[in-house]
Image (cartoon, rainbow, N blue to C red):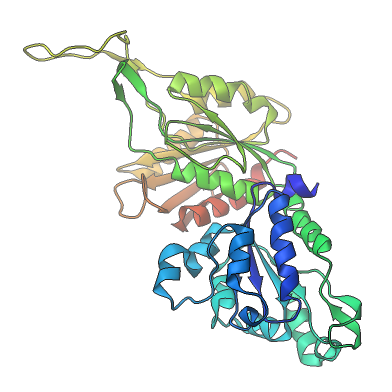
Amino acid sequence: MVASALQGRRVIVGVGGGIAAYKACELVRELGRAGAQVRVAMTAAAKEFVTPLTFQALSGHPVLTDYFDPSQEGNFGHLDLARWADLYIVVPATADLLARIRAGMGNDAVTTSLLAFRGPVLLAPAMNVAMWDNELTQENVAALSSRPRFHFVGPGAGLLACGDVGAGRLAEVGTIVEAAARLFAEGPLAGRRVLITAGPTREYLDPVRFISNPSTGKMGLALAEAARAMGAQVTVVLGPVGEVARDSYEVVDVVSAEDMAREVLARVDEVDCFIASAAVSDWKPQTREAQKVKKSEGPESLTLVRTPDVLAEASRRVSGQARRPALVGFAAETQRVVEYAREKLARKGLDAIVANDVTVPGAGFGVDTNHVTVLTRDGKQQELSGTKREVARSILELVADYLPR
């Protein structure tokens, strides 16, 4: 269960300044063995116990220690780190760190990146028994425990590094890894199968020319990452976008609209949710020439025919099924955005549609942010904005209400 739940997950390990910091080295190694991608942030005090170079060697990535360092921020800064991750583990979560996290402080690499992180947080406390028993520490623990995204593992009890006996020992590394795996196994989409289309399609005129669009697949891949982080088993039917990460979910490569329709229809009966975020070409040349077409004098004409409507065909296929998957479409428009999206929602029998005006700066093709309006079949309408990953998670949270029971 541990390996499958953590495979491809993006995990930050935030290392606090306590003697148990050396065990964070083993944690980074074991998370990697379980298939997770790991990056590390350290407080200044943590560097007194373990060097950043050790964590860099174990994780394979530079370690964030100083958000005032231009070289660190330029490489992969605290905001990039927070947006990248699926889970944040703080180990050891010292009494000082717990107090600062509860207070919402951001005065070192760990607390600042954690403050910007919006996903689940796993806190592994370790400290002297008197510090753990202190009523202020217990108030901080209780306050953090009351918030749904904060989870605790440990501390254990026994002989402490200082020689005292009692609660305050860092949980065993294996126990922390298992707790992390459970958070994904128990996510809001745990056990659900999600099928997503992403990217453009290409409709070739001849071996060197094609009709396509500017889609880069960023929104669809953000949906895939968010769904995986929420516990789903994800398959992405992906148009030609170049190299992408493939270790978190299944990727099925396609080129044309017909390719995409074939792969979707082969899978849509078996999933809980189908999200059609790909920018599928609506037309293709009536004929595809075997050799490059040479230029000739005078005007040229090109006869186009319609390509398969992937979402409409998928909707027709599952219509009337007792356990029909939730169906989500996308509508990239340049005018009358909500009006056109609402018509498409009804015409294709969808549960939700995500509409965006691709002429708006910071939205649409090729950028890392988006501004969308989500319409649902029961008349709800909600605007979402932020990074595409943030928007993706919000879309999935809305769509969860329409999943088959």
